[in-house]
Length: 167
Image (cartoon, helix red, strand yellow):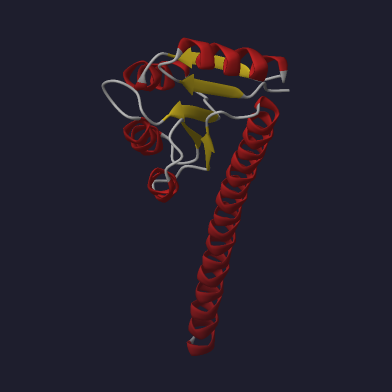
């Protein structure tokens, strides 16, 4: 069974390591990043990141910019934004840019783990749905090809029958 991978980006080492240790004990594989630049690089190099948890306010680039970057790379990745500032505007902005959820500091680790599990479950469902959609499209293409072949065969039979009648 595949172990889900979570990328945690926070400029505060204590929070980053606390989240990483707790989520690792919950059965996730965690990759830690010190800022948005580091997180984006690790997102590209690690591959198969299921969930990104990012602080909104970090030096250099914000978590919202990181959100846009990772969504451009993988539109199905789930992103949970974390912020010490209880700002409704930031939450709305994050959600409108594709974040799955928004968590305010201080947070309860059990609640964060529950949100992470729900986000990863949603990602699995989205990916399964896309795979189902691709399979349906493939089946429709196959049936269309079979129908076209049957119509071509019917056309040939029709022409052969007309020639036989004319003869």
